Each structure stands twice: as C-alpha cells, then as structure tokens.
Amino acid sequence: MPPQESSTLMASPPAKSVYAKYLAALGPGFLFAGAAIGTSHVVQSTRAGAEYGIGLLGFILLAVLLKYPSFFFGPFYVSVTGKSLVEGYRQTFGKSVVALFALVQIPVTAIIIAAIAITTAGLAGSIVPLTLSPPTVAVILIALCCALTFVGGYKLLDWVNKVFIVILSVTTVFAAMAAVPLVDWTLYPATAVSPLFSTATFITLVAVLGLMPSDITLAIMNSLWSEARNKNQGMRSDTAAEKIDFNIGYIGAAVLAACFVIMGAGVMHSQGITPADGAVGFASQVISLYTNTLGEWSGVVVGISAFTVMLTTLLTVLDGFPRMITASYYTFTREAEAEETRTLEGGRAFLVCMVGLSLLAIVILYTLMGSFRLFMDFVMVVAFLISPILATLNHLTANGPTVPLALRPSRLINAWSWLAIATLTLLSLGYIYVRFIY
Image 1 (cartoon, rainbow, N blue to C red):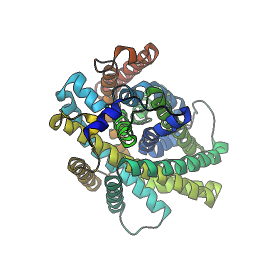
Image 2 (cartoon, one colour; image 1 turned 135 degrees about the vertical axis):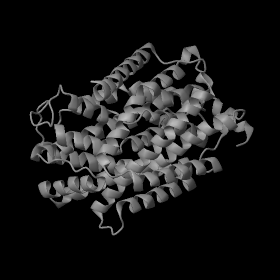
Image 3 (cartoon, rainbow, N blue to C red; image 1 turned 120 degrees about the vertical axis):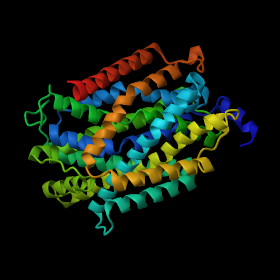
Image 4 (cartoon, rainbow, N blue to C red; image 1 turned 180 degrees about the horizontal axis):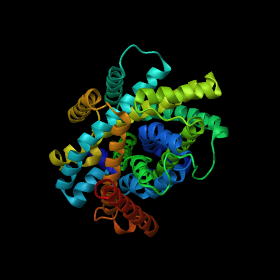
C-alpha cells in the first residue's frame, strides 16, 4: 500500500450520514458472531440443556454479560489507535508477551480447528449420506475453507459470513421455537444430572463457560478484522460505530446460545436422553430426535442450522487464527512498518500460518479424537483457565500509554472489566482446587 494511504487511515472519516457511517462499520461484529457461535453453542450449550434442562441457562447468559468488556476492548482499541490488540500488546508489554501469547495459542488454536472441523463433518454426514469417514470429510472442509479465505481475503470472508449468519440465525430461532413447548421451565429441575451445589455441576459449568460466548482470544481476532475493514474502506470507524457493530454480533451470539440450550432441554432433557459422546453420534442424535418428536421438517431445519453454524465458525477461525499468528510474527520482523499498511491475508506468512495450523489440526483429528466429549471438555477448561490472563492483558492495553487519557474506557466499563477479571480468576482457582487438590 502506498505511504499516503496510511495517513488516510489515521485521519478521521469524511463526513457522511449517520446511517451510512454505521452501515460501513458493520462486518467485524458479524465475523465475531460467526466465530463464536460454534462448538460452544452446538455441542456444549445443547448438551447443557440435555443434561440440566434450563438449569444452566442463567449461568451461561451471566458469563456472556460478564465477559463483555474483555471482548469489547478489541474493536475499541482499533477505534482509538488504528492498531490491533497484537500491536497493543507489543507496545504495552513488549515482544516477549507477544511471543508467549503466540506460542500458547498455536496448539490451542489447532485443537479448536480440529474440534470444529470434526463437528462440522459429523453434521454434514447427518444431513447427507457420506461414504467417507468423518476425519476425511473434516480434512476436505478445512482445505475448502482455507482456499476460500486465502483467495478471497477479508472482503469475501465478510460477505460469505453475513449470508451464513442470516441463515443460521433464522433456522436456529425456528428450531428453538419448535422446542419451547417441550421445555420444563423449572429454574433448576430435579431431573438434572447433578445437584446445583455439587462438584460435578461446578466442573461442568467451567467446561461450558470456557468458550461462552467464545475464548477471549476472539477479542484479538476481532481487532484484526476491524483493522482489515478499515484498510479495505480506507478510513477508520469511530468508537460509536465499532460498538454498534460489536453489540450486534455479541448479543446475537448470546441469543443463539440460549436457543441451543432450549433445543437441548426441549428434545433431549424432556425425554431423559443421554447425549452421545462422539461428534458424529451427537449430531445425528439431535437431528433424529427433532425428526422423531416434531416431524421431518424440524430435522431438516435443525440440520441446516447446526451445519451452517459450524461451517461459518470453521471459515472464520481459519482466517482469524492464521491472521492472529501472522500479526504476532510481524511484530518481530516488520516493526518499522505502520501496522495499518500491512496486508495480512494473501501473503506468504499468512499462508504458512494457515497451512501449519491446518496440518496440526489434521494430525489431531487422526490421533486425539477418540473421546470427543473428553477432548472438548479439555479445550473448554483450558480456555477458561487462561481467560483471566487475556482479560487482564486486554484491560491494561485499553488503558495503557498507547491510548490517550481522554479516549480511554469509562469508569463503568473499567469497573465491569475488573469485576470480570476477579470473577474469572476466582472460578479458575476454584476449578484447580476442586479438580487437583480437594
């Protein structure tokens, strides 16, 4: 990009109507929703409903509310500095923190990609009869999504994701509405698999809330998508526009999480059905239960909804994770270049990161997917345990020296953020005590 474009990005946007400004900002929030509404929703939320009825729904929504500032600091930071949180970490804490962050994220992101891919493959096999094995289908899906994101970049990803988000939102809401009459609306039903105040319920809560609405790493990816949107448009969206875009995606993720809990409570918990452990078996189980309970039409709706959810997630994470690792790499190799002028997608570093993470995910698919439920619980717990650290980094970056004092978050959002950090820390310590000491 020519040097003069950097000054354009750093300048305030030209005058335009309020509606046009907010419409132009839409995109990263939808990508946030596309990445967040994945395995945590289709698998964990549905399973929570199947085992606990609506008993855990309040905790899930509370977790979504509590984590809001930690996620919002991603697009917020871009709106006031023009840079992503990766660059914010480097300028606030130094390169060592960025390096440690990237090293931790590489195996975690590969595990998440593998989990999303195998779940998507399982849903595909439940909708259309396939002769290939689920891991093979998962590999094909990974390859197709990689090709699409690498060739199309942010602009194509944004367009495809918006189409998928509309489909998954409509079908998921319809499926949840169909399940509503079957739900036992007792606050915490006696038929739950374990009492509310028990070690088993606490461990389940940690596993479910670990990726609800998503891993806090998504805040970093969201900041990179906001940066890509700014570059694509040649101007930076202000904080108000970023907030509206983010809120749409965030609230949408919360609503659909509730929908999947209701679906699990209505078609599985009400019939006392134990969820299957495997991704393929669980997907087939949910769809067949809808078909048997509410008719053929409902199975089709649920199948399309769940598959679209997972395909959207796979597509967005196969752009977001390589983008995040590439940005981390660039902090060590291209520090002198203004971050806003970089084109992350389509370059050699991005391709290497995408292929590397995909190959690692494929290895995991063929070696570590014996017990899908145990595997997913492990991923959720790891995500939960590192949440306080990432939330703290986001908070300190948004309030750090790279942000002008007058533009820093309000006292309310900062107090909210500290409450989230304290709560996540206490829950993480509580989990370690219950799991390994008690």
